[in-house]
Image 1 (cartoon, rainbow, N blue to C red):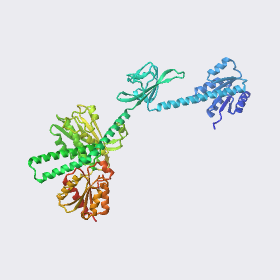
Image 2 (image 1 turned 30 degrees about the vertical axis):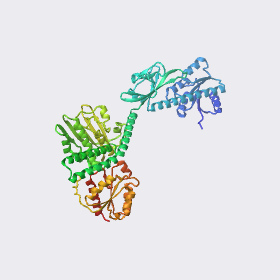
Image 3 (image 1 turned 45 degrees about the vertical axis):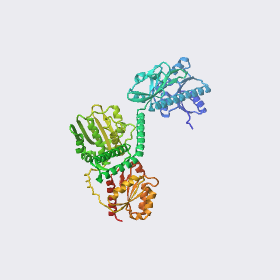
Length: 636
């Protein structure tokens, strides 16, 4: 329930004050009374009345002065005032009262109905004024809070009202009276509503314009006045630069995903076939039955097969679908160990230097893949400096924070400490178009036959799959820099882990079950294992493998080589079933599929024995012997 309206009656004549107060109280108003101007001002400060009815002639401060003081104080300037007088009843006095700031003027004797009607009218007017001001304040707050730039222009396209967002977009703090077409040259003024179009005459209805390397979505609509005429228009500008950049990145991500699906689909077949080609080529060379010419031909076949397998691996690296084996690395030690190789790669006429900060610390990454990243960038730099130049690899500790993220809109930056690797050269550099497409697969500026366009795509994929970031900066004729950020792992760096010497392959007598739906892979595995004395059993799928184990041969199986992805029961299910039935059996998983496919089957754990296709025959034998040796040493 609303509080009753409080009315302050001020009159030094008690009878007059009493008569007015009585009529007001009977009408339901709360009445305050004062006998002079000073008391009235004190009550106003203390009780905050909603209306003052004040006599003109009073000792001390007269009614005119009371009103002037009220209007001079911002706290009371909006208090409605009704003059009432028994002495000043002439028109001049009434006009003076109104000019002093009063909202109404009555004379004694006043009829009660006239008094109450005047009070209601003044209160309604002041209430409407308050509502209008509240609405204006709310509109202004909303106007300023809008993230889009908004302004109202007159028929000449001049800015009449605007919000802070528009001032930010056009880069000017004060816009009053300025032609909007002067501030944004892609706009033009026309005579007909809505008075603005694009410079080419196109209507501004969600029209996208380029303004100082930013993209603005601009709309303009006529704003009719109360009488129906159109003398103003409202203009809305939305900066969609980040949105468009995000859309481009989304499209790139979608293309990447599509390429990854394609790569994953063909990788299995490519890797299966290259396993067979490389394996048979090696057996042919080992046979000793080839002429020198045939040996050279077989060497070329192996090179071609290895190149095909490497391209498949590179494409999978770009799509982040390869199997990584990350471990803790001392970043500086890992890079420093590559120094001799990089110097040889650079050749004569090109200077090479390391600038390694001790703060770079440790990272969790696949060492071989990280080395591949640096070598790919070094190769590009070498080719970009045919007449010599300077190449450097530097490290530092960087913190990626909110300010850094703001510099790369649309990219989700995981904030924290990062080890930064900067690879720089003084070569030819790249123009803007080449720089924008640098990481796209199969995009290359090298002549036909000198590049596949997968080098930088591989760099991008490896770093992204390692939870890092990579950016390139380059200017034509002024060299190129690549900045790589890898999450730093807290803790002090330790010494390098010594490499274990390779163990020569031994002949064995164990029974090996090879399960693969590709007959050529089974035949190759059988041949490789039988060369070292192993007894080999074959199965084309899970059901056939279980049939072998139920037969008399099952007692002679010591290890199962299982393809991961097969029709029906997959390799992981089969391996777990075999281990439950016969815990003594070892398992080695093989696959030509990609990291995503293996992740779904929980095979990316480093503790799971796994061999990626294509593999040389001897590598299969080596892994089989490792597993058998470990099982022989483990307690039963």
